[in-house]
Length: 330
Image (cartoon, rainbow, N blue to C red; front, side, top):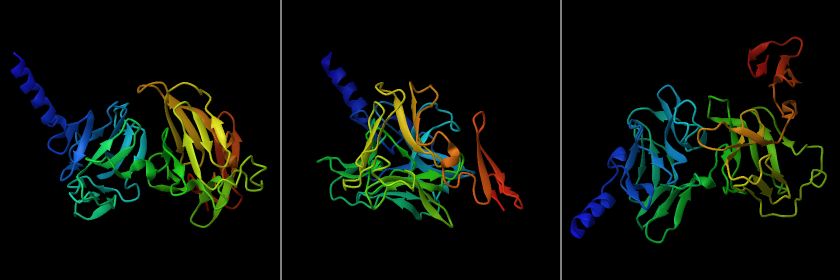
């Protein structure tokens, strides 16, 4: 009786999961993309799923016949209500036909469009075999299969969101989206400046200005220190954010292990969101600005921002100007 059982187990281990076809294989509780394999934009089932099933990586629709390779919270599963936490090609969407994410045998991970042009690449090389895995933390990792050396990871190249245990350092920054529905790079950035201070900056087409901490305050007056040159900030799983410039905050629900994300929203406000489970709604548990009119360019040029508690930010044009779009007056 023992022999058939061994054969059944062997088949289960060596056979790829039917949902992922031949593009990925199951390995140590990970859905893994191996060398020489690819994920196709035309296959909704071509996704990588973290072992805890909290995160999914795959092709995310960003417009009509336009996609980005992204990471999102798996639940809720409806395509128009997913919470995206990372994108590879936010400013260069790919076609909905014949586009692929491929792991080459050279160890380079590439995203190609319908015309086979490379839209994004990890720019990595390895003589050893490698694989792509999505970790429980939401970190997408390209790693060698033998000595487990990390060649590339999404945690090193955030877009507009930090996840717990994902560091922000001197080589990375957060960049907001343009709007709720436009995921391309916006005008707000969170990064360490040359004085080692973590700042929010409005970097518009005509003007750039730092506005958090308040630009008229010296670092020490804002409770920041410029003496630590390590330039690293981190959010933990309990809701505590600490930065090397002495800035720290605790979420309103600190101490409880919830799903969390720190996002630089399109309106320029840095917010910490949390929820109890996959089906719960995201709740703001901390934000940099309670009054949105203090955010630079909150209403665009030639306009006035008014804060109405029951409504929030309300924009109006200066005399002699009219609304061009919801953000600008000309």
